[in-house]
Image (cartoon, rainbow, N blue to C red):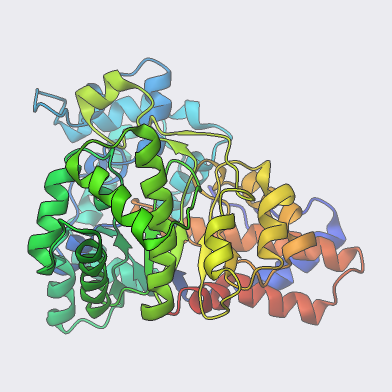
Length: 469
């Protein structure tokens, strides 16, 4: 492929399996990309303006990058990460890029290094590894390309062969950028997804004010339980107007609840008044996952659950830089007991689609695969976040396939904010899956014709089906 990316990258070392993996990969490498869940900015595609300088595109917004550098003593301010109070940070893109290049060795062996080499080579045509010595030359090369029409967001979308991409917006978003995309006449498929965390988590900053805004935007009375649920229904319907096929829920745990209507109404009154304690807040979040599942039976939005992250683990960083600055840490997560109330209520509904993710790999074989392997509504999301790596993807297949098979999973989604890395992430996933299938063929556990079919499903079809795209 290039000096940075070998054509046999991630394929088995033994010759027979490698040959099988090559053949399988050849059949899927050029398939269109389905990116059904992520955090790219719809404004990019709406305005279609040139991306900013290389540092602002590839370093400043990427927590995978700056968390590693921070762990080795590089100040976030020196990497251009904005502060919550607006105090001055480095704004010279070239200086930020130089600091990154000086510390690029820190990423050896990490998926971030792999993604970045893909971006240099596949997107910008650079085949020389980044070093402190060539930092300025690489910066100038990338900056020059970003200034051309061929590197505007819509052109890259088409070049990346993206069939559909879903962004993720909060329940209070007016979706103006999605409206602009829709009204522009451009053929690229960019849809939204409903993320209501700010109005279902009583411990979210500004929760009471958020409920007021939810009422204003929906025209529903969010001062009572039924009106609050109606507000969600109204907002979900609005999101569907802009192509939404899913909702997304980033809760601290996978806890669900199945309260009676009267008990849920009383709990909501406590939450709405601001008097709920931490236990009541957790119960409310749990009940709302079940409520969202019930709504999904009506409006067919796929329910995604992304639990188990201790968000903003460092209060000092949260106070200085705000949310999502690399200090979200995985926690142990229970699924068998946690999901049972939801599954008792709607788990046998084959028309419902609930995709569960995890940051706790110990739950794959013990809990998640057995659950998805029997409940019709459940599917397993791919290796996620800290495990979105070749090793994590291999472990996912090894630990889930024996119980859940391939068809109770949903293929791959990149879950990224880093738009230029999308082709890299999908290519890596396709390579890992082809390598796994090649092993099954070499061990005479799967026929080659079956492996070719499964490779196509994992690379493209399963995600398209699971997310109703």
